[in-house]
Length: 247
Image (cartoon, rainbow, N blue to C red; front, side, top):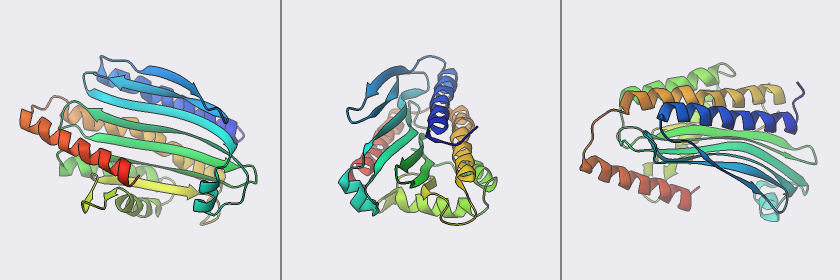
């Protein structure tokens, strides 16, 4: 199969389908509700929202593939030459009912320009309301195993990147227990070509379901009190603060 924007887009659509199906099975109650949308400048996507399930209180698994003229502010910020762009990917955030189950976020994405510029980006991290060291070790080992299949330098590099990125600076605290984060992965450094970068991104996308399923099943039936729910609300507020102020 040729590696072009069409094949990458189709794989991301399949990833959204697979993750939604797996999450519905994991939850056992609710189904995703889909909103298909179009972007006036070019492209569109499928937003899928989950509400009031057994496990997931609210969440989204979204796919997009958009194109058009690259905004000038992006050209300036990333020091890019003027050209049209194409971008596609999947983005996920899930907030559970039970405060003993962590919030999880993932996105995997691809960007290219009509002048030949391209790169991959993404990451996955968890934000527990209550940190359990055994869970943190499991999650990070899962990510390290995924990274090591493709480059033994990836995990340390991308973990440190996540630690720096997912930090609420005005509170001097981390958003959660981190994970990995990467951006602008192309063929300009190391021995990686486009195909090897793509295989790594696919690996991360496919790591989401088994990693989160394990964390959910460890804690979905844990007991909790009103005090735990109050703390959950506070931690959700921190999550919003990060997204609005720093992300």
